[in-house]
Amino acid sequence: MRLAPSSSTCGTEHFQSHWQTSSFTMKRPKLKKASKRLSCSKRYKIQKKVREHNRKLRKDAKKKGVGKRVKKDPGVPNSAPFKEEVLREAEQRRLQIEEEKERKRQAKKEERAQKRQKEREAASKDTEPRAKKARQDEAGKQSGKQSALDKNSKQYLCSELNKVIDASDVVIEVLDARDPLGCRCPQVEEAVLQREGNKKLLLVLSKIDLVPKENVQKWMQCLQQEFPVVAFKASTQIKDRTMQAKKSRIVASNEVLDRSRAAACFGNTSLSELLSSYTATIQKETPLRVGLVGFPNVGKSSLINSIKGILACNAGVKRGITKSMQEVHILKNVKLIDSPGIVASPSNPPASMALRSLQVDEGQESVLEAVRTLLKQCDHSQLMLQYNVPNFRNSLEFLTMLAKKRGYLQKGGVPNAEQAATAFLADWTGAKLSYHCKAPQNHSLPSYMSDAVVAEMQNGWDLNTLKTANEETLKGIKFPNEASSISFTSKGPTAGLLSVSISEEKPVAAAAEEEAKQNDENNEPHQTAEEAIETEAPEEPQKAPLTKKTAHVQFQSVPIDINLSAATTDDAYDFNTDFK
Image (cartoon, rainbow, N blue to C red):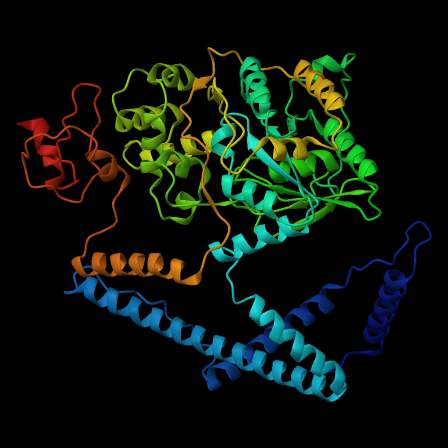
């Protein structure tokens, strides 16, 4: 039986509690905040309430079955039979579930997109007037007819080239100074001379910094007997207008220090002044339209960018970047028109097709065949000095050594001959490698030219000023030595196509499809780099049945003996050989 506390005891407890609350809750003058300390009885009481609350939560969770922990999947034990099959089946089920979820997600996404499209179309039908819809339908029909031609087709490229010739008052034929004769197209020159409007034809020698000076002067003397010639060296470091130029800390005290760099451009002033003076001579009210024609990668777009001073046209090492005509204003009274490259005729020699056509880029010709053709036209000793490789006897050895030198290696350290061939061809078509062709000693006019035509083409130009400007251009450029430049045998002018019918393109495509089907039926893979080059090697007696594994093909500098018998064995290493 519990006794009630006496009055004195109650008074004491009341006094103590009052003293504690008043003292501990009261703000002390030297502290910013009141103390948070509690009495022990109050702290114990709070802890007890918390324990009771947690106990109640656990009890409720136990009744509902929520509190049970999910047991961890122990997996398939190692002692279980067919463990790998079970794991594989489980993985397949998991992948199937994920694929099903992804399929449903994509279906919902497409459904939402179609719904939005229908709503958009319904809104546009309600808001658009009938006259505007009629104009759009008519414009859509016309654009559909124009887009029927593929921009990569020969027919479209020829039509764009003809548009440029028809729209131009002056046609500039851009020639690569390394092979000017091979860059000339008789069909285009004849078409320009026969078109109405008294069109003028002008020749521009580009990339003159990659040819010895004496060779450039001889070619200019040879070509000036037919048309006016402008020496030109384009800048290869033209940047876009939107890019912010970096401030250079070092400023050259003499302009001669910067003349040999790729950023310098020579011949742009002389060409601009020549066109301006011709415009003043003929007193043309409208701007003079100057069209640029030539084979791929001769420098048409780079010439426009160098004269304009900004990146107005796309240009690069890859051939066939320009697909359609593009007009660029360079002066108030002069307008340049860029054009796609001339389509080379298949009747040209293989060397001309390798340098001037787009067969390699379009996949119609192997890059290995193109390299093999070019190597036949060059002196091997000059190639050895240029690429710093030892003596070789065929394209197999050359490409193998070039791949090793530049680090073009496949898995297992096998030289990648195809990558080396692509880099070699890019050197020849781009503005990097120095090679030259000798100018002809005895010059004769082509069949479509005569003395009267030559006089008419040279009439109206300020030839004396042009001659002086060309001399100044040649003085400012640093030319390579003739010993460091590769001597190349030119195959003469390259024939081009000005019109291609659709029927001519279909047989080529049909033949390619038929060949692909035949390869698929016979289960024969396409010819690899090693197989294509292997055909050039001397024939050896067959030692073992050849297989398609080419990982063990080894190229040696000794008489070529490509032994593929090791390809029949497995690629795994036999560790027992070290212990026999």
